Length: 242
Image (cartoon, rainbow, N blue to C red; front, top):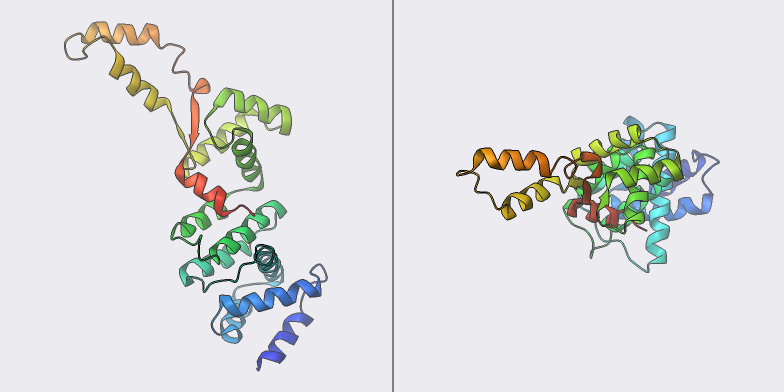
């Protein structure tokens, strides 16, 4: 199949929800993503992607192409180990806000000045985020300017502004910690306390533990603990920003 017939076949099978003019931009970017689009794209579409995944991937590529054009950037040749899992996993996404993150991640992965091996980690993070988790992460990051936040206060804000209960929030918080997006400052506080303690642990063990129990009964309450965004999270948020 020659390129002209291949492109014509793609256009004929495009869902009505995708505008024809955006498809042309997506196809032009596909030629950058794949050295041999007739073979590579054909294999992906034939074997792995059904109509919905096809539509999702085209939308993400078209949006990434638009973002590249608005930024005045010419796409660089992508790393295969980045671009293939990015498109593969992005094609599964149906949430509009997370789709926007996928297209931004693709756009930045094609920007020579921003491409790093960390994009592989960002792909793994993004594919595991649910729409609600994406909303929570965006809200917290914007609300606290990427700085630390108190768990109890953040839970109150989310329940007040987005009707997300503290129980659900704590589950999301655990998942963010699992993905190394946030970290508790509790260990730092304990270390600082021990470092500044007037007691020598080895010499005054009994007195030390007695003091720890009395002085820190409320200080180390987990709900009052401050959380911090990791460097990985900050890089991820930048890579998924338009």
